[in-house]
Image (cartoon, rainbow, N blue to C red; front, side):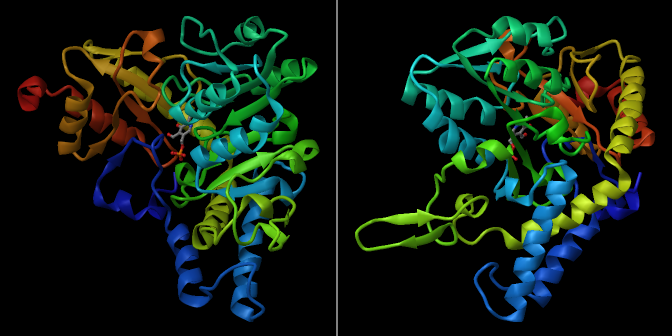
Length: 397
Ligand SMILES: Cc1ncc(COP(=O)(O)O)c(C=O)c1O
């Protein structure tokens, strides 16, 4: 789908590392260049036409993101530098003020470092207890296991909608429904889902959502926090400076603005946020449902072809996203990734920043293919051809 929109694909590269970051369609650089070439100025600070246009376009992006995830009000959308930044701002701007010693936070062992380390830090600071939701035999999260992990002390469930290694889609709607009946907050890490699934934050009843632009055809250095309306003004800034304050005086008194400005201190990534607006419209035009069903068809095809190679062990055959995690018997994953690169095929090898998942699957490193709508069956065929090379081990040594 839409391969012509991506310059890089014209070079013959086969890009299967979309979980790390996606390729960028030309519309992104067009939007960013338009800002830099034609109205480069600060936003929210100038009373002249160029700055008014920059502010307008920046706020348009906020409205586009709001529509994209089905939020009620653009004020619920904060621009950050990425999912990591978003989760840290939620954990330390909100949960630091509402949790107390002995409270429990539920995570999973397949979470990304960005949804573990901020909680470890807060747990140390407040004496919280971190508990892990058990994964099932496919290393996936089930509602039953979430329910089993909950105790009267559970206050937060912080979970990715799609794991970046297992690729399982977690039952977020069911989790929030159960959690809210028990007065538990749900923070959703949407880093791997926002680009691939239609998200409706109201239907899913999510309290906080975090995601990154660069994993959805957008620029690096831009991310999003969504906050539910009833807790919107309870989230405090953790970065202070210009743009987020309404007033301050010599005696140290200060008044901070309301959301979302209070969380956007300093000059934001104006070009990136504007470019992000362009690519979200681009993705909405293709349709998230079309993207997801295309990825599932392509994943099915890739699984069928990978199974032709007896040395390959796949770890997440059943998951319903475009992520395939596997190993090739007798070849270290990083060596295989370097070998594939010789054939212009980009994949990811390693622990994928999910360093405690090895406790569950007993394997530290794997190879990961993460598909997107511009990948094709021809590309999968080429991967299989290269993996079937009878001299593969000799070439690696
Ligand atoms: C599930 C998940 N959460 C969080 C992140 C962190 O995203 P970023 O590096 O854009 O902040 C990633 C990145 O790979 C991820 O896959």
